[in-house]
Length: 120
Image (cartoon, rainbow, N blue to C red; front, side):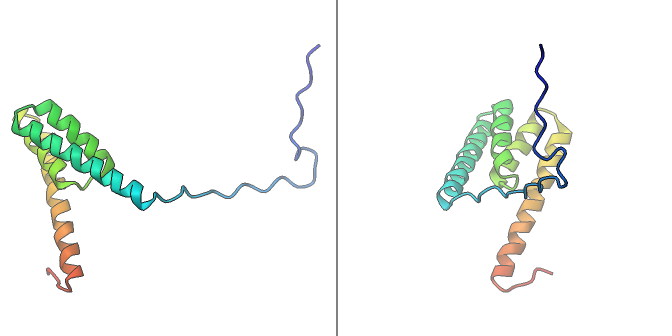
């Protein structure tokens, strides 16, 4: 004969168990952050090298890997934009160029702010 399913402990009791508080993921260590930054740098450099060699699809694939880890990497954004342009993918090229410009402006603003200057 089939066994009846056991009831959860809170069934039939007067109070349900308290919901578990969401736990935040632990912050990466400084060493992990450095490894991640180095990986992004290497991927972006490889994307740029592929773009220079005319390996457009490879350049985009490598740039996308770098951008998945750091969407503001200027080298990866630029390599992707040039490669997409060479492939005739105007929409991707334009999107990458606009993201490059935005990342560059943000970088300038942060640098100027840190130096105590205002751009505007």
